[in-house]
Each structure stands twice: as C-alpha cells, then as structure tokens.
Length: 170
Image 1 (cartoon, rainbow, N blue to C red):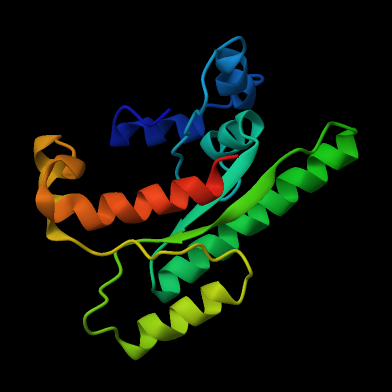
Image 2 (tube, rainbow, N blue to C red):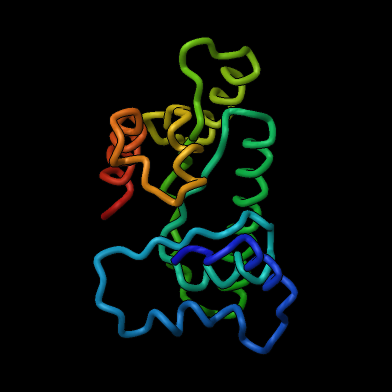
C-alpha cells in the first residue's frame, strides 16, 4: 500500500475514531505473500500508527546524511513507543525491526559526512547491505511515472533492492 498522492499527508489531521486501524482491517482476509506499506516518517502521526498497526515487520529507509540518521532515530522511537503502548494494553507485540536500508548512496566519491553517517547507522546493528546506489534514472522516471527497473541504468538499483528483499522477507 502506498500513498496515492503527496496530498494524502492531509490525512494526518484525521482524528476519526479508530482511524489507525483502517489499514489493518482492510487487509483482513487478503491472500498475499507480501504487503508493503510505504508511509511517511512523521513520528507518532496517524498514518504512521496505521501502518504500524497493520505491519509485522519494519524496514527503515535512510540516506547517508545527518537527516537520514535523525529520521531513523525518530522512527525507532516511534516504534519503541508503539510497542510499549501495545504491551501496556496487553495487546500482542509482534512487530519486528528488519533493518535499515540506505538509499541514494554516491559510492564514487563519498564525503566524510556520508562515511560517518554510514558508520553511525551500521552501529545500530540493523544496517542492511548492499547500499542502494544513487542513479539519475530513478529521479528521471518518477516524473514520467515509469519504473527504473526496465532501464539498463536502473539495474544496479534493482539488484540492490532485490538483495535487500531476500534478507528481509521471511
């Protein structure tokens, strides 16, 4: 499940009763091997809580920057708080952290800040490899709504995500 448009973020203001359970309820009875929920990293927001209620595994997305580290730290705090609340309610806590995927990595000449960011993310014990390389094709096809995997220049990105998926999927 992915947002249909960027303006879906206006749902963050939706405080309807049990709005955080809608995705989980809508997935009930679905026969699927894998469901991917792509949600914003807004700590504690309704969309994030909805995703956590429906999920059994969390994969954190990051960039090799201080903002990427901050995003992962904030997301991990949200997950920890979510799990604490589930335990306080006596509700099952089956959510697992599969790891951190670092994308948009420029491997040719990596800045010291990027190297330091990668080391800090690696120190969490959740670091997943390979790194997802930065490729212009990924941004270019977003404009046209195409998939980068159908282009030769997108192959390294596709290969990296495929390797990560094999590690994460159980």
